[in-house]
Length: 366
Ligand code: G6P
Image (cartoon, rainbow, N blue to C red; front, side, top):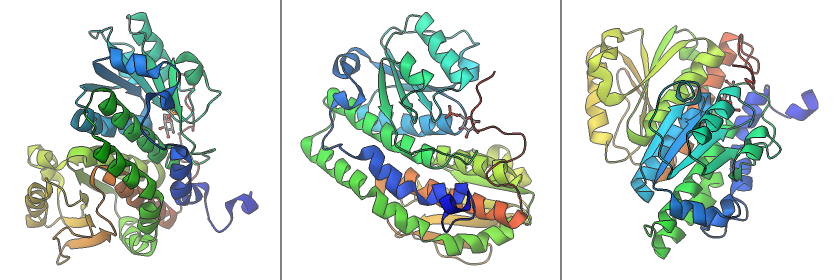
C-alpha cells in the first residue's frame, strides 16, 4: 500500500532507490574472498571445473552476459552464457568439468529450472545458483548457492535483483580467480575496497535523477530508441533497452557500438535517440568514432559518460556525467542510470509501471 511506498510513486522507483542498501546487504559479511561463501564443498568444485556455463532468462540472462566479461578477464576461465529456453532444447556439447551457474531472482522460472536439469542429465553435476529466494526450487536443486539479499521485488521489471546478482557474480569472479591463483592479495584488497564503496557510488548515480527526468521528457515522445555500449557495457545496453520497452512500450534495441555500421545505422534519423554508455575505458576512443557515425546522420545522442570521459555536449549530443569512474564494477553504476531513464519515460507516458501489460513477475510455465 501507500505506506510501504513512502516517498515513492511506484515500487519500481522504490526498488531502484533501495539498491545501495541491498547491494550492501548482499555483500555483508564478505570480509575476504573464500569459496565457502558459495556453500560447503565449493572449494573442491571450483578446483575441479575448467569452464562455466551460465543459464538464465530475461534480465538475469543479461547479468550472466556481464559476468562472462568479468570471469574471462579476471579469472581466465572460459564462459558460455545461454538463454535457458534455447539451451534446454538444443543439442549442445556437454563437458563434465563445467560449473553450471543458474541466475534467477525468483528461483522458480520454469525454463531455467528445466535447463539446469537438462545440463545435469547430460553429465554435468557441478551446479551453483545465484538466487534471491533461499527457499526456492532453484536453491534446492543446486549443489552450491549464493543468495542475493535484494529483498522482495514487486515491480515486474527487475532492478535491484539485477544489481545484486551482478554483485554476487563479481564475487564469484574473484573467487574463481583466487582458486586459479590469479588474484594477488593486493588485488583482492583493492577489489574488496571497491565493492564496499559501491553503495556510496551508487547513491551518487541515483542523485542524477533530476537530469535524467529532463531526458525522459524528450524520450516520452519517441517511438524508437537505440542503446549502444561496448565490452562489458554491451549487456548493460541490452538491459537498458529491455527496461525501456518493458515499461514504456517504446521499441528499443541494443547493439555493441562496433556493429552500428552493419545494420542499425540505417535506422538513424533526427527522430532516433541513441543512448550511449561511455565509461572512460580502453574502448572510449573507438566508441567516440561510433558516436560520430550517429551524429553525421543527424541522430540525437544521449551519452552517459564518466566524470573523466573527455566528451562535451553540443549540437545533437547530450551528456550526463556519472560522478565516479568505477573500473570493472562500472556496469552496476551505469545500469542504475538506465533504470531511472526507463522509469521516468514510462511515468511521463502514463503507463502502468509496476505491472506492464502482458508480462508476469515470475514465469513458472513454459
Ligand atoms: C520474468 C520477469 C523478468 C525476469 C525473468 C527471469 O520475465 O518479468 O523480470 O528477468 O522473468 O526471472 P528470474 O526470476 O528467473 O530471474
